[in-house]
Length: 92
Image (tube, rainbow, N blue to C red):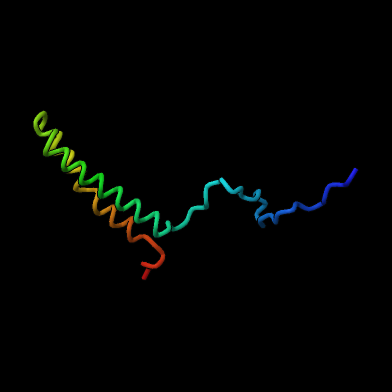
């Protein structure tokens, strides 16, 4: 019967944590350009959908709901800009 190796085949980290698997989530850090672009366009798309729905559909039923939707859509673009510009290349 062959003996098992005394050290693991993959190097372990210095803090004693087990090695990461291929499907495990990545460590926290700055988002990549592609991820930031995707998040920016999703947020701005949600903003446009909210405005269009508010003033083409919802205002026929409730003006208050349409105004609330517009206010939410008004708050989204600054956060989208922050997310879009949050990369390491933009640090000064």
